[in-house]
Image (cartoon, rainbow, N blue to C red):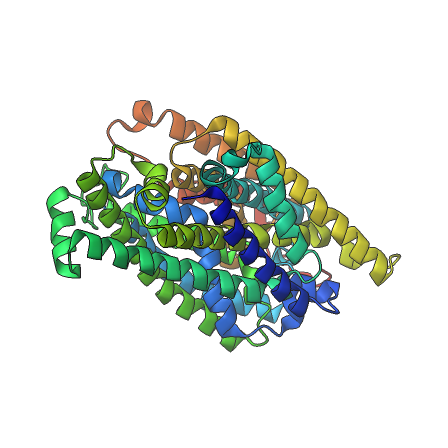
Length: 487
């Protein structure tokens, strides 16, 4: 299909986003940028967060991993549901009771100023790495499908996309993202359903017949019972629960959308309804992965992994499917990238430089400072995407989850210690504990065969990381809960 033709659809889609951003971002303030003036509609937030939770990595990597891991990822999704229940009924009541703009202010109230800065810093590191890895995957596909034909270099493609994201998030922030995420999630899910229907019709299969064909090829196994395997269902379910608790419940990007809803009750509705929709959608992605491999087998295509879906959609499907794939892919890209840049801007402004505490600055000066930070993170994103281009990992979802295990573990340990124990810590030692824990986990992961033999560490590394942090905090703590309310 003509790259120019595809490119016109990309531009048209972006112009629609700009129109939505202009309409929703009018007369915006710092308060609307950070938490949408606490007036977001919970149903819009819930639907839009489906797209944010999935991202372009899910769109490409989850179907691509089916040949190697079957439907094992659905075990993780079951854990997601457990994690969302914890978020709805443990974390959200805490955040609403303290009326937080940044969720990391809880760490200052409970553990101390250094703990607060440490938690916020680990979020910035983790979200920057995760978001740029997701961005790289989609930019790379767009580069191969469209931009190479125009002889535009990879760095310029990345820059163009980041400028697009800046244009529609620069003013409105969360207030705008709630609406753009809803539009983008709709396009992504529509693309998913259309691709499934097309392949089913092409293969002349119904739902039952297709699942039987996947079973015969070994693609559809969900539960794995070998305790030594990294795909063991207990490991996967537990890991899924803790991934959700940390990567959503202790993540400023995800939580700033939840706390932008006016009431706790509606925010809880948002989380539970979103988790149920997410389980269904991920199963459809896995089902699509099985169909793609059946289709590739019929076409004798040797392509696997992250390259499978783009190769089939762009080279072996009708032009209208190729257009739908590109729009759906971009729709999967933007919610994860725009929300990440906005959340990182919020965290850096509120938690690192303490903008809200600066009484010497006018609102106009604060807004200018926030916009400069927003631009700075776009530059950082460009740099990290280029690093991932150099690394060129064959499966980005595995890399992203591994990065999350190392960087979200300390955040999990900090929040768990503050919530579960009534003890105070020696605040100045907290950064040392939070740095040592991922280093220990890195060594455990690197030398796991020598240490554990046939037992494989997988996604549960996040839990181990959080536990080591928790134990370290306990060792530098004493009886008596430290609680202040000066954040």
